[in-house]
Image 1 (cartoon, rainbow, N blue to C red):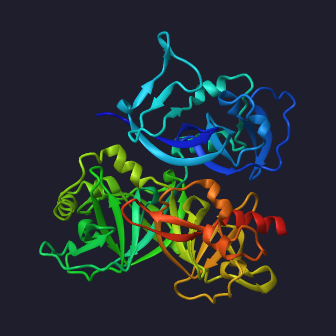
Image 2: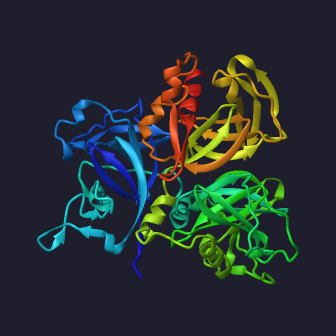
Length: 485
């Protein structure tokens, strides 16, 4: 069986580069504190700091256009972690995440060996662009390239290497139990789906629902996991997962609890004794106040015979051209969070560290001029609680049972933005990071014209069904609040 390799695709001077997804940490704006390195030469620009860490910055544009560096900084810097060290690469945009099988990668050779910084071509089937895989080992061997070591202790560093990257997990409640799932594998969350009865319905299937022109089975997660034998009522929320064949399955749940960013190795093992379906659970996540959430093994869940049968019943035809690569690519488009504050906003999901309910224990320190509601403690860190609706020049919205707090980190500080309601996780139809500059609002304290508001709209969804929401750059807001202190 062919191995699958994941790459984050970035753009530099019009060239698409694929970076191993395990090494690509994040993309940040061009830093304002770049200082020259005493021996800087070639592609090494200098050193900057990111959340207290030193990061060398290199510029590869001279490989593609000799005069490009003189044109000034790029919009973004990709943060790379390789062999325990950090490095920043100047980039123009983050494009997408792609998954490639071995037979979709073409080695470029000189003589009998592959050489150079871009030794491999990733074969994209749309025929509109070429993606070159960046060889990080070759990059690290260049004399002008330096990596900044992680200041963690050796034991901590080894633990980090063994555990891999931090991941976002959705924590949700279903039938009085807490579950969690890797957010990157969730195709969509559907709020209050209109579920129609089905001739194929039973205790495992509530019925079916139309999602963007596709009929999807609404399944009882508890029954599939073997937790319930009695008939359960239909759910108000639906979590959609896409299988390797492109077919979509829906699992009902009661409410979304939080989004947590966590090291996968910190999960506890699941005691399998007495469980009917132990293979469907991968671990246990510790939550606040002693609560725990069961981590779903999404691959095993989608491979269950009853889940596959319902997916095939309601989705008779899957296009022959929808290969595993294309299905994975559709799932891994740039994810976004949809929420109200009170305008309907969309923000990149990777800007949000966690989503929490309004903390019951918080210090009320209302300051209308700074939009401050108070502050609360989150795992030992004091977080200012900001009224987002007031901050973006709308009327302050009092907290309700539907209110949530979005945890967003700036360069040095962390903020909690209180919003009226979180709707769903979806994906941008076509996301260009430079569009964040047109988000709402571009600058705090500046009145926006009608044209500004129109330009801040962005498409959500896919080619078959899409709609528009107002784009909001939450990380930019956090950085502006830092600068205003």
